[in-house]
Amino acid sequence: QVQLVESGGGLVQAGGSLRLSCAASGINFRFGSVAWHRQAPGNQREQVARITYSDNTDYAESVKGRFTISRDNARNTVYLQMNSLKPEDTAVYYCNFRSCWGQGTQVTVSS
Image 1 (cartoon, one colour):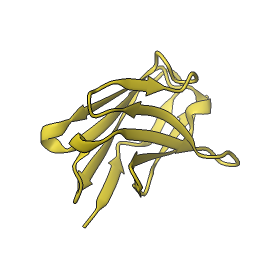
Image 2: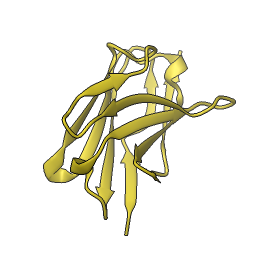
Image 3: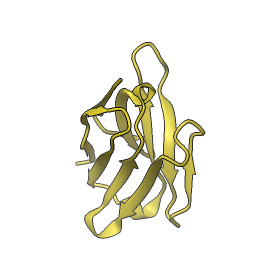
C-alpha cells in the first residue's frame, strides 16, 4: 500500500543536469517533510535535500546552489533538480518520507 518510486537517474557528463522524481502512493506528501538522500560506493548514506510541509528547504553544503528540491502536491510527487553536476555527485539517490524509503535511482556523473 505504501510505496515511494524514484526515477530520472542516468549517466551525465560533468556540468550537466538531471531531474529526479519521487512519486508516492498510499501516503500523502502534504503531511510531512520529504528528503532526498544519496549513497556512493564505500560511503554512508547522507541527506542532500529536504522540503517541509510548508515548503521550507534545506540542503547539504556540498549541493547548495546546485540542487533544488520541490513538490507537486496535486501529483503527490517530489522532485530534485540537479544542475552543474560533478563526478562526486555519483551515487544512488533515495527518496524518504517519515519511515518510508524508495528503491533508489542511480546517478552517474562522468569526468
